[in-house]
Image (cartoon, rainbow, N blue to C red; front, side, top):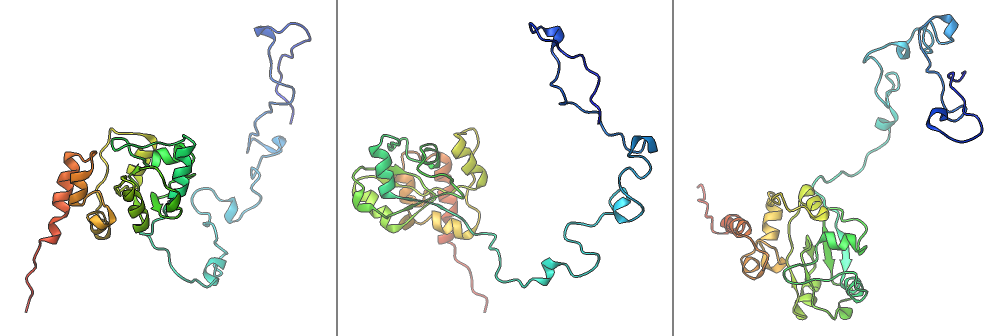
Length: 244
């Protein structure tokens, strides 16, 4: 392909009037179907008749093998994909203590450690579907910490509360977790809707943020949190008549 005719800058002082693209950096556009003299005329580079020469939506989808059973169907399948499965980002207590000693992270009852602080400080590299606090290295924890993960193990809860800290497990859906990481506070966080999540986050043993003791002890509990706690805990008082 020949280059477009351009004014070439000459050696000497650079001015606005003698600036030009580098030699060979620009080429003429290929004009398909403009006659045999263009080199791409007639069939426009698509060859002679056939399925691939047609325009429109008549082309087969990826993996189609002309009617033969595709390789995707010939391979045996095993197992299934759980649509409700969660991938947690694990954080151990000894790692948090090391980050505190390095001065890379801090917490208080009014400003607890969230997924945002853990991600920005480099304590985790990906929050996935939420943070899960684990109790490994509990013997190295010397500082009271205040943290709001998505999940927490029983050993981690005992170790944190033994030093006077607090753990309040908070529910995050994908949008709420993204807002937490980006520091957005102009939108309301979603409430749990699945029964498993409701039962888990209203249980004080798990230190769920919607449990009655959590609402009373958490200094960050809002009126909306108290309202959600009261509404979602009603199922424990519901009595259903048995049909005989």
